[in-house]
Image (cartoon, rainbow, N blue to C red; front, side, top):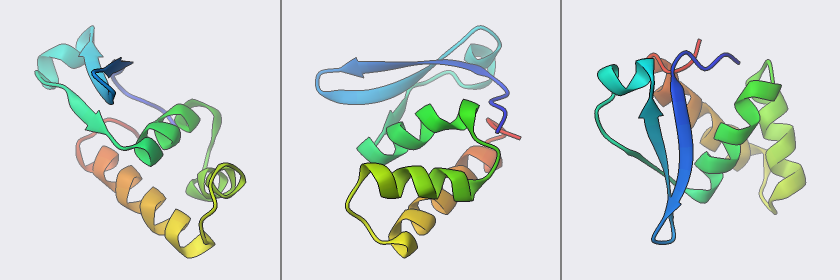
Length: 87
């Protein structure tokens, strides 16, 4: 999956945030807080082509059912697509 804007991931006071930089800072003037699972999914995006690949990686990393992993992945990826962060 292709990330369309530049972000850096930062841990601040025990929470994880995406910080837009470069061309992303004009479109997204704030920080994005990430849950632990959203942070994991974000890290997978440059290496995967499909949501199923993310789900498989979640299953290898967390003790969760396929249904929960698929729902979490679909929700986060849909949000990123809606905001036009990924293609």
